[in-house]
Image 1 (cartoon, rainbow, N blue to C red):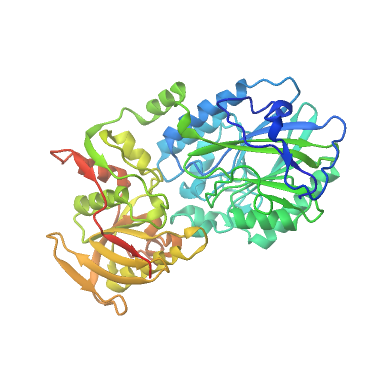
Image 2: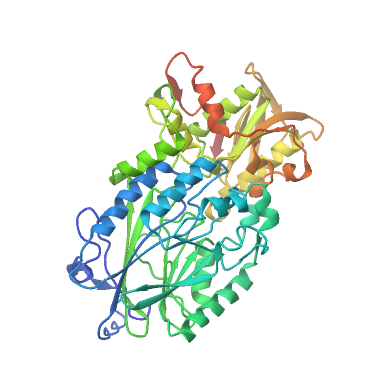
Length: 531
């Protein structure tokens, strides 16, 4: 049992008031373990409720649903005094499309968050653009492990920490950006202008900041982290004084509270809670907690809710439409395969058709992308440009480059390692103009080039030809060595052309050429075998 923390069972926001701690499902208000009696509550506990979200990746539809959840949270009433806080943990913005990022900032303003950690996808935009987009935002941008030059426009926007006060109770809030930031962003000025500390130094700096709060008499500390669950667990166990880590980056869906997963002990033996609400805005959460007078958590309830149960907020949808302009009708989808459950390592028909669009519209030999780049899916029925926009939310720039057969096979092999890597990272490669077979042990078994007439040429995956060159369409995240699938071709200038649009434009142009309804189905271009 983690230091006597009582864990309430999850509640359904649709059915009951999440803020009413005392009356929330009392029949199942049980502790983690019966091996140790719960610590008795101190007098006048501080009751706190936190609304949180992370890793939305520019998914506008789910932003509008989360806004409805946010409004419900604001409307909740309690007979007792409850401090309410709101936070994001990064990757709310995504890609280089300025209009999309204006929408993301409009959303964060609407939900009224106090602050957000900076994730890697915030830096898909250049530092000056981030500063411009957030210049009138009331929420703070946090990154204790980030450094930019004093002359950089972003310098005055990034803070290490700050204090939020509710009903006379002070909360210290710290933010941490991903230590692997430079590996997770496309090639742009962010890599050169933003430095990120290694994780060991970050732990030391976080502890120093917590100690500053303690010296000010602040004993309730919240860390907004875009580091991933494994690193968050390390932070929890190797520091003292942090109460809550609101996590992100690895897209974990941490429902409820589980000992040694998201309920851990600090160096001082006090409980630390970790949250993370999945990915792409498919979930959002409310964390209800009680602190004793020493700032130690004594009760906790972590509610994570699916956004699909909530309608899109009409005013926010209208705001998005005003920013983006009217959607263009593209045609009809006759049928569409369901989205893959394991998006990073599964064949994905929704990505296939986008790659087919790139190959066709740019008239190249091959198109390819990392599977993690495509975040949404198509549905049967009328299709318009807004739907395509949401399926391709990251908004990078399309690139044409020349890759050798060896570079192509190495990229597929690097992606295949995702089957055995933690979190299925970085993700498999989804192509058009190639087909391949891969095992669940991460081994590339076979590959073939498929020409535009459908002819197949087998590639020797154990001895690919370094002198055979293909014209390849991708985007500048992939081309700049993102996910380490290929070397950085943007940095070295080894590319034919870099466009000022992303895959969504090509997909829209491609869809408009169909004279009959579109079928989106698995065509077997990627085969996954047991061994």
